[in-house]
Length: 132
Length: 132
Image (cartoon, rainbow over all chains, first blue to last red; front, top):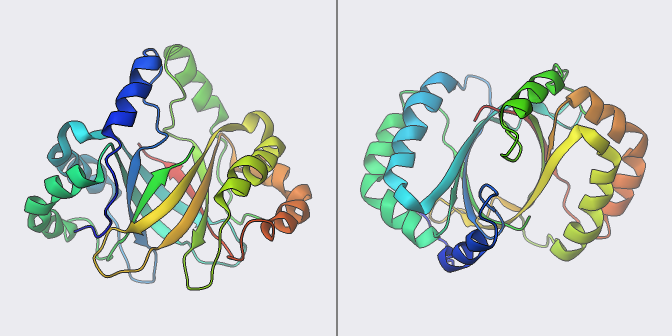
């Protein structure tokens, strides 16, 4: 499902964790996989299903590689007179992109089959590295 | 600079904070302003300048309305044979969109004038609400 080949950040993560035992997850260096649903006329998105069914299903596939996941609801463009860019974005913060791909691969059909339950939008997916 | 009109989440934030004094910021309910730099041939982006100069400058304009800001570097599309969607994304997590607009407005010229120092990309800006 993913094309990028990026080094695992697992080891780096571990060393950070041991230095800051009382903080929540340090995000720097983690890989983000952001699934972005572009807005357009006639497109629909069921946030309640997405939040309570779809995202928990995908998160369960990812196991301990998943540090956290987030969901946001698009409200507006930040530029006047521009349309809303995205109706929703779901983001997985993982230690290793390789492990993410290995976990999603065998479940790709189940994940895609669930799309029709909450949206008719084909998502854009961005793989990025947390710089700060 | 922003078109949306959204209620302030300042009060809600306060009550969450008092319940979880030892955790870092609870993000649910915050407004995100994501400044997204689309990738295309010939486009450039100086991450070092962006991280050390541009983002701190904008963050300073936002004062106590700013809960945190993040920076990510685009690595790849998560869909095979698709181009990288974004070279970089900078995100401000704020309590109130109204306060964000009021703070950015008078500094819009300074912010835009700084763009040429790190990129030739016209950004897409998404205003969203943190659901989870």
